Image (cartoon, rainbow, N blue to C red; front, top):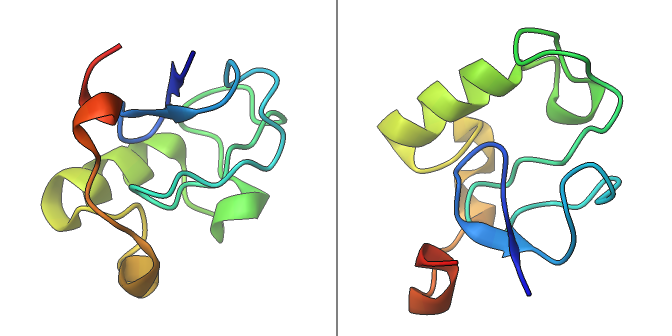
Length: 82
């Protein structure tokens, strides 16, 4: 079973986000940060971006941080649906 990424929403996580310590989503390249307490708190694992900033970047650029564009890939059909 796959779980959704908190940034892009695709089902790429192998476990719930609360347990996926430092997991990096291959679709948006968000590194899961279990230590942030809100979507507006800067994430040390993501170069100081907040989760909301990562989401906005994903909507615009298909990556959480434009500097990481070379590392992402499109979601598979399986990752688009639960």
